[in-house]
Length: 121
Image 1 (tube, helix red, strand yellow):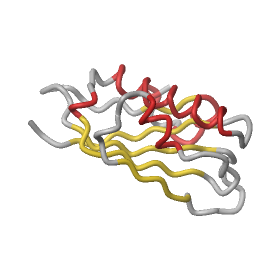
Image 2: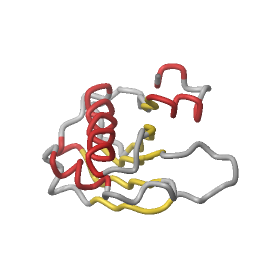
Image 3: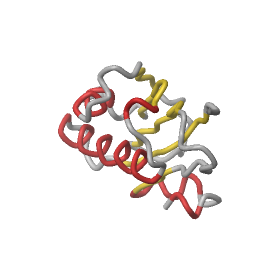
Image 4: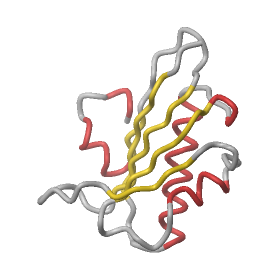
């Protein structure tokens, strides 16, 4: 088995705990489903949020989904002027099924972050 890294991002409508948790759950579930992953396949997850999101930790949503034994980390994204607002990003280190190619996931307005990854939409 070979360690892989998956990327993903989603935008959030409001800086509200429920909105952040809901969006993070949507993102994590999409990554798991598209890549055929289970919690035991994950090594770690790093979440970042833009400066305008501070009502909740995205890791709360991951724990709600049963990833409570996976090391989780939340951090701030670099506040580049003009960058997309209200974005949650994730970097997942995992052991996917043998022979599978990583399927990155970009949802909602975050699709514009990686137009080169059409399969991620």
